[in-house]
Structures are given as C-alpha cells and as structure tokens.
Image 1 (cartoon, rainbow, N blue to C red):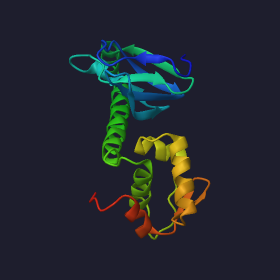
Image 2 (cartoon, helix red, strand yellow):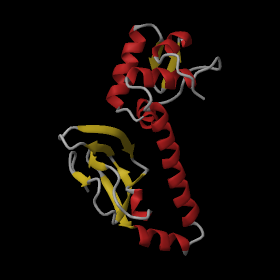
Image 3 (tube, rainbow, N blue to C red):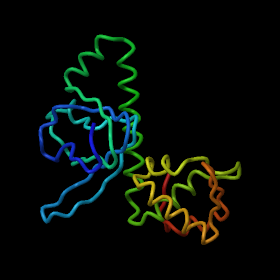
Image 4 (tube, rainbow, N blue to C red):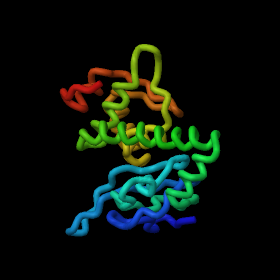
Length: 191
C-alpha cells in the first residue's frame, strides 16, 4: 500500500520488482538535473508498473510515484517469469498485460507529438468520431490513452464545449464540428 505522493522508484535504480497496480494511479516522470520534472503519463489500475524488472539489464528508465493512494502487488521479474512459464494459463495472461502496456505506450508516443493538451484531446476525438454516433469513452479512459490527467481532460472538454465543437454527456461525447477539432491540432498527418 502506498500513499499519494509516495516515491515508488527512481530512474537508474536497480529494477528488482515488477508491480501489478490493483488500485489507484501511478505517475511516470523524468527528473532533470536542475530539479524540474516532466510527467510522461499516468498508469491506471489493472496495468503493470516497472516492466524493466524483466529486461536486460534490469535498470529503471523512469521515475514513478503514487499519484493517488495505491495498492500494488510486486514480485521479482525472475519469479514472475518462472511462475508463468510453469503454468499454461498464466503465460497468455502475462502476455496480454504486456500487450496492453505496449498499446498504451504506442498511444502515449503518438499523442506526445502535441505540446498542448487541447490538441491531444482534439486529435483523439477527431480520430475516434465518425457519422455513426458519439464517442463513448469516460474521461478516465481518454486520460489513459492520451497520457493526460483526468482533470486535464475535463478542463479541455469544457473548453471544446464552450467553443461549440463538442457536447459532453456521461461516457458520451458528441462531436459537433469535426473540422473545428481538426483545426485545433493543426495540419499534422496521422494514421
């Protein structure tokens, strides 16, 4: 159990354990020599934290802390891999968790091209909307995919709503002006 704000590990330290985040939210960030921090992403419950424990060499590549109170289960990378190798059911579950993280990292890398959160959100809504109806994601889900905080998503949705680009409901965002969203994130091409 970790309290909000508690350090989990620092970049460059030995990666002795991998964690499963059962409850709460973890922040991954970089700490620069001048003391400034740059938040990279937030990891939500149901995801792995500290996958470097199964890498070679097992060294942390980012810093992490508990963004909220957290419950995490940890074990050494070797224990995890040897335990999963001996059980036919566990290995696919472990691979599914790794694939989930790869998908999230891919999304975070894509959305990192935008320096403003409003551009990230506009791109997300643009790329997930069409004529078939509203975008059905919660603010937490959008935050997880884009690497933003839920508060940032909420603030940006409010701004886009005020501009008449979207209409917000519970787990439902209706895009009113796709071209207006497109203009918010510029002329960058994406797939």
